[in-house]
Length: 131
Image (tube, rainbow, N blue to C red; front, side, top):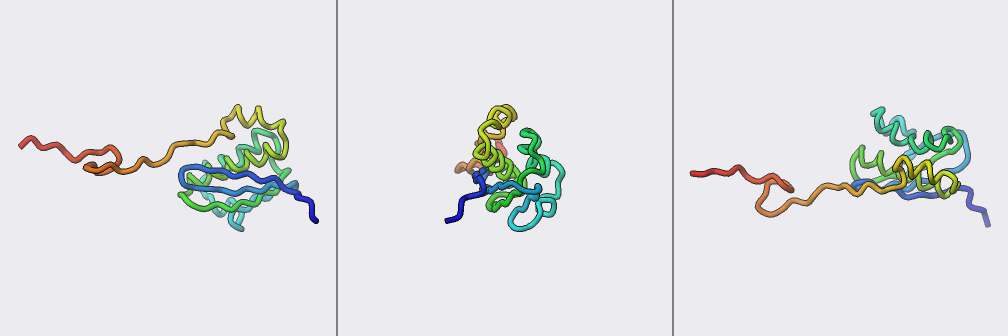
């Protein structure tokens, strides 16, 4: 039987879910089979994805394979970042203070609020008319 040579972490943000596997390697990051630079064009999203590696000073030491679905681009970038941080924590427990200090292990609970009856959106009421 083969020995497991990767660490896995699941990241979530809004309605996006990312399943992350990291293994020792050259630093290649693949998201849904394509390089992350193609999937995330914005520099802000790319920084969010690589932040766990910057914080733990492991940039270029792990190959990352990610399956992400649901949500939009920003939610997916946040989910990937959360998943990478969790996978790094499983790889080495010494990373916990650094990751916790930058808030990378905490799941961001913010999500879209549901629409309420009688309102146009979650909180926007129709314009009041006196006469």
